[in-house]
Structure formats: structure tokens, C-alpha cells
Image 1 (cartoon, one colour):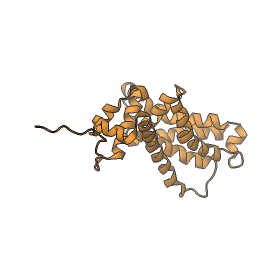
Image 2 (image 1 turned 45 degrees about the vertical axis):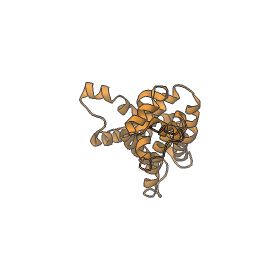
Image 3 (image 1 turned 45 degrees about the horizontal axis):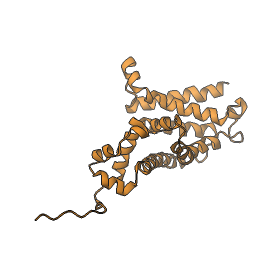
Image 4 (image 1 turned 180 degrees about the horizontal axis):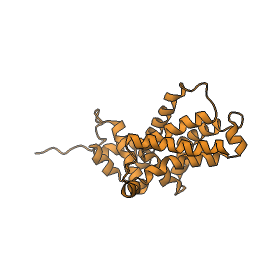
Length: 214
């Protein structure tokens, strides 16, 4: 007589790749929004059982937070890696460096802005969490380097941090968000390394040279 399987916690798979799993999750959330993303689909693409997914994350919201945190950590690491190279710079010159690296990051990880766009349009608790844990630290970089005591250009022209940071974020991402349109209309793939770098230089030229001109 065949023995019945005992119910209980699923056995944790020691071979599970959490980094890969969260990368899959963030793409699903970015493409479909929080409500549209299905945990069982994420589990299927990751090659694990949905019960194991529940065991590790205790629900979709925690999965979303951990996936977004992993993505935010990648951006933090990008900024930390370059800080040692411009210790003697300040103000606008530092903003240029951060902006360039931010654009590189967004070109490599377009899901970042998709997630931000989804949540900022809904004003949910997730949006508050995203602002507190991911966006505010980024904004602090702009605020620090846009302070009137560290740069004359932004202070003299009276451009508030809220405006300049929003302009930079929008300019950095629109090219990638409209990638299908750009490719269909202009025959340009925004996600090639050459186009990402070109877009970064164009954004810096338009934003920061116009500040100097004013």
C-alpha cells in the first residue's frame, strides 16, 4: 500500500539562486505591475515550486520588496564604486558623474523606472516604501550636490532640487521607456552600449550646459 505524503513545510532547496530569482521577479513586476504579476509565474520561470516561493517570502508583497531592494542595492553599489574617483570634485561636476552613471544603470536595468512609474501612479503603501527606501537616498545625492554652498550654477539660477532631480530622472529614462517607438520610428535600439553612452552624453550636454549658459 502506497504511503501518503506528510504535509508540512516544503524542503528548502539549497541550490536555489536567490539573486536570479529576484531578477526574474523584478522583471515580472516591471512588465506587469504589482497587481498583474503572478507569483506562480515567477516561481515557474525560476524553476521552483510556488509553495517554496511562499515558504521563503511569505507572500507577494515581501517578494516585491526584496526584489526592489536588490535592484536598489545594485544602484547603490554603482555609486559607491565611483565615489573614490571624484573626492576633490563638488557641485555640478559631481552631478554630471552621478547622472552619467544613473543613465548607464537605467539602460542596463530599465525595470527600475518601470517599477517607479507603476507605483508613483497609484499612491499605495508600496509607493511610500519605495520613496522611503530607494528614492529618498538617491535624492539625497542630488540635494547634497545641488546645495548653494557647493555649486553656484544651480543656486544662481534658482532651480529647486525637486525640479532638477525630476528632470534628470525623466531625461535619463524616457529614451529607454519609449524604446519600441524609438526603434520603430528611427531604427535605433536604445539598449546597445553605444546608444546608452550616447544618450548619457546628450542628457548631460543639454541639462548642465544649459545651466551654465543661463
